[in-house]
Amino acid sequence: MRNVRLSAKMGIGFGVMIAIAAILSTVSWLFLGRINRTVALAEDAAKGTLHFNHLRVEEKDFRAYGLETRHGETKNAIERWEEHKTELEDLLAALEMAADMRNEDKVAVQNARQSLKEYSTAFHSTTQAQQAKDDAFAKWGKIGWDITRSIAGARDEVIAPALQKAIENKDTDAFEQWLQLQESLNEDVVENFLVLRVTAVYLIATNKDKQWEDYQKQLQAAQQGAARWAQQVRGIAELENAAETIRASLEQYNEAGQQYYQAVLTERQADSTMTVEAANSMKIFEDLAETLENRKQSLVAFANTFSVILTGCGIVLGVLLAVYITRSIVKPINQIIAGLTEGAQQVAAASGQVSAASQSLAEGATEQAAGLEETSSSLEEMSSMTKQNADNAQQASTLASEARGAAKGGAELMQRMSRAIDDIQKSSDETAKIIKVIDEIAFQTNLLALNAAVEAARAGEAGKGFAVVAEEVRNLAMRSAEAAKNTANMIEESVKNAKNG
Image 1: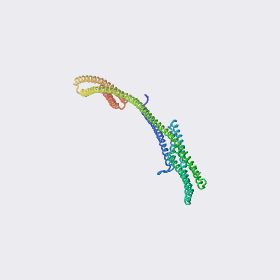
Image 2: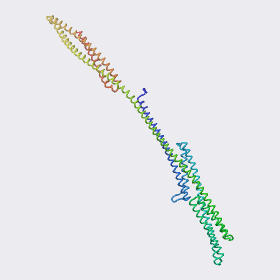
Image 3: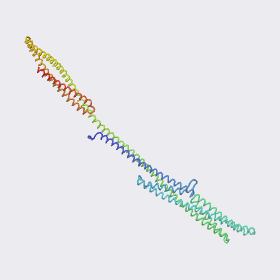
Image 4: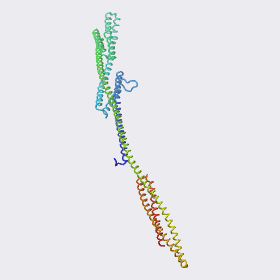
């Protein structure tokens, strides 16, 4: 990682944080989806309980209203029951096929489907039993009317006319006979049959075994009474027919009663089965809903714990990456700052050297200027003397008398000129030394300026100012070297001219 660039390190750090965030988001999304699906399954399980409650309600409505469609409804109880059953079967099929359902959950759903099947069979048995009861009740009504018509026919069409005839004929024996037949009809047939119908009504109202036993006893009494009356009317053809009709009707009444009670027993068994299976199904759905709810809570707790752990790991890793990247950034910056500081110190030292060299250059230039001024004065004097010598030499040819004096003066002037030339030579030597020093200073200054420019280039933006100063110093050194060279040439020319007179 040391050779990796800073931008790459920062990219890796941010990439790791983005990856952690992506992992956390993905895991949270997966857990949230699973939690939502578990919640949906728990709601479906609760709907199963609700559908079974609807089935029980429709079952009670069927008992109360049968196949009748209530006011405000478009379907009867059985049709509504079938709709709820279909919805419940679809719900159970969806639960069994759900991907998040475990094997034990699917087993519970299969048990619920089996319970629903048993419940449906029992309910259909109940509907059949109810139909059988309704049929038996209808038969009872029809048979009752048949017996009533037979009794009424015997009394009104046979016994009553016979009594009237006996009264008209004043036949006391016939009157007593027919009156006894009429009283026997009332006591043995009519009264027993009316009580039988009342016990049948009680049986319909209660469906209890006690009422069935009372019904059986009363049926037996009615049959015995009808048999006694049939014995009394033997020989009377019209009444024998009525007695036979009543006997046959009572037998049919007994068959209808047997049918009704058998339906009661079937219904009672179906009720027991439906109660057990409904309780089992409700228990299965409640347990399944509770299991799914607990599973949802476990998923939520696990998701929270996992998110906290992953978030903590992300924070720790983020802090470590931040520290590592910060150190990776700060360390090179500190090294750059140290290099810039060292460069600045070197530039400062070079500047000090340049300043000292510049000061020496200035002092040498000042001395050079003074020497040049002296040389100029000497040259002026020499020029003046030479002119004077020329005048004197010209005058020597005409002024012979003054030749000796002029020659003497010329000799003195020549001595002075020789001394001046020696002085000029010495000054030229000294000036050459100074110029050499200036040239060396300019060379050193130029080197220092080059070093300063190199250090400024290494320092980058921070060394731009030093680069400008180094360039100016270098230019100054070059100008000084050039000025020193020009001065040396002028001095050399002056020395040559002085030697040449």
